[in-house]
Amino acid sequence: MKLTKKTIVTNTVLFVFIIGFVVGFGAAFGNENILIGVSTITAMLMLLERDLTSHPAGNTMKFIVLNLFIGVAAFLTGFNVWLAIPINFVAMFIISYSLLFNLKNPIYLPFSLQYVFLLAMPVAADQMPLRLASLVFGALAIMGVQMLANKNRVTKSGDKKIQVICTSLIEKVELLKKSEPHEEVSTQIASEISGLRSMIYDKREENYYLTEEGSLKLNISVALEKINLLLDAAAAEYAHHPVLTDTVQCIHLAQNSLQDKEMMVAFDELYDQVLKKYKAEHTHDLFILEMLNQIGFLRTNMHELQALGKEHYYVVKKLEQIPKKFQKLSITEKPGHTNSIKLSYAIRMALAITISGFIIDYFDMPESRWMLFTVLSVIIPLYEQSRKKMRDRIFATIIGAAAVTVSFLIVQNHTARSVLLMTAGYLMTYVKVYRYNTILVTYSAIGSVALVTGAVQVLTVERVLFVAAGVVLALLINKFVLPYKLEDANEDLWAMYEDTVQEMAVEVQDKAAGGGNAHAIKNLLLISNMIEERLKMNNQAAPERAGVAWLQHQRRIAVTLYELYGWIDRHDLQDSSIPVVTSSLEVLLNKNAGEESSSAAINKLHAAIQATPRMEERMMLTMILEAMEEMKSLRVLLQ
Image (cartoon, rainbow, N blue to C red):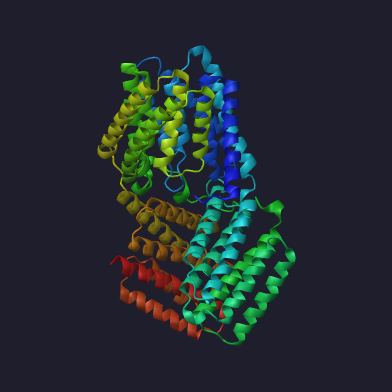
C-alpha cells in the first residue's frame, strides 16, 4: 500500500470509528454481546462496496431475519450436544449458501463470524432478549450506514468515475503520440469502467430493471470502453492522425458537460463539424469510422443524460416482463455451472463448523473455540486458495503468539499493554496481505485474553495446538468433501461467459428482425463484466496468457454486440443492409462455423462497407465486422 497523507488520515479516522462503535456497542448491550458489535462493524465495512439502497425496507428486514435466525440457532445449540449437530449444520449451510454469489464478492464472512462468536460465547435464557435486541440493532446499523454512504451512489461516484475515465483516455492519446507505454493507464481505465458497471448492476430493480440513469451511464461506459479498445488497436500510422486530436477534444467536452451544460452545446457543435469533415472526405477507413461511431454514441447518451434531469434518474421503465432466463430458479433447475461452487462451499463449511462445535461441546474444552475460528478462516470456496491460507494461518499463529509472549514479558504495565494492542489493531488498517494481517489479528486476540487472565504462556500453547487441529480438519474436508478447484471455477465461468455472449448475439438478431429486449441486452453486458472480474480475481496470482487473450476477445465481442444493438435500436436497418447483417449474425451464432465460412462472411462485410454510400451504414457494418473478426480469432485460439 502506498502511504499518503490522505491514506493515513482515512485509516486513522476509520480506526477511531471502529473502536468507538465496538466500545459503544458493548456499553449498550453488555460485554457478553460485544463480539456482535465486532461482526456488525465488519459487515458494515464489507457491504459498503455494494449498493443496497434500492430496497431499504426489504433489505433491512432480510438482515433482521438473518441476524435473529443466527441468534436463535446459536442459542438452541446450547441445550444438547447432539441437538447442536443438525442445528450447526443447517445454520452454517444456509449462511454460506445464501451469501456466496456466483459473480459478486461473497458477504458470508461477517455473518459466519457472528454465528461462531455466538457459539463461543453463549448466554443464559434471561440474557437472550438483550442479545436478540443487539442483533436487531446490528441489522439496522448495517442499513443505516448503507443509506448514509451509498444513497445516490451511481450519481455521485458514477460521475467521478466517468471523469476519471475521460482524463485517462486523454492521457493515453498523449502517450500514444509520444510512443510511450500506456499499459498502466489502460488498466486504470478498465478498472474504472468495471467499477461503474458494478454500481449499475447493484442498483437494478428486481435484479433486472435498470434505472434511467443507470441505463444511460452503461451506454456511456460502452462508448468510452470502445474508444479505449480502439486506441489499443491503433497502428503507428494513426498516432498523429487528426482523428485522435478530434477524439481528445470531444472527450474533454464530454467530461466537462457533466458539470457545465454549455459544454454539451459545444460538444454537439464540434461533433457535427468533425462528422461533416469526414463525410466530405468520403472516408472508408475502418479505424476512423469506428472512432466516429463511438464519439457519436458518447454524445447521444451524454445529451440524453443531461436532458433527463436528476428528478428522473431513478425512474424505471418496466415495459416488459422479466424473461425466464433472468428469473431466480430452484437448485434443480439451474445449470451446473451456476450452482456447484455455492453447494460445495456450503457443505464443506457446514461440516467443518459442525465437527468443531461437537468437539468443543462434547469434550468441554473452553480454549478449543480457536478451532472454530481456524476452520472458518481457512475453508474458502477455492481449494488452491485454502491450501495457502492454511500455511499462512499456522505461520501467523506461531509468530503472533511468540510476539505476545515476548512483548508481555517485557512490558508489565496494564496500560502499556493496552497501548500495544491498540497499535496492533491500528496497523491492521494498513496491512492487507493475509499472512501478515493475521499475525496482527493473532497478537490482538491472544493479547486481549491474556490482558484479562494473565496466563500468556499456557494460552499460547493451547491456541497453537487448536489452530493446528483446525487446519488439519480443514485440510481433510477441503481435500475429500466436494473439492472445488480453480480449474473447475475457470471452466464454469468460461461456460457462463460463452453462454452470455451467445445470448447477446441472439438479442441482436431479434432486434434486427424487429424484436429485442433492451433490459435483457443491458443485463447480459453487466453479467459479462461481472464474469470477467471474477475470472481476473480468481487467477490474479498466475494469469495464463491464453486465458487473458480469451477474455480480451470475449470482452470485445460483448461490447460490440451491445453497441450494435443500440445502433439498430436508434437508426433501424436499411433494406439493403439486412441480408448481410442477417447472414453475418447467423455465422456468429453458429458455434460449429469453420474458418472458411467465417472468412467468407468477413470478406462479404468488407465488400459491403466499400459499396455502402451512407457513412452511418458503414459505421454499423464495421461493428459487425469487428465482432466477426474477434470471434474468428477466438475460435482459432481455442483450436
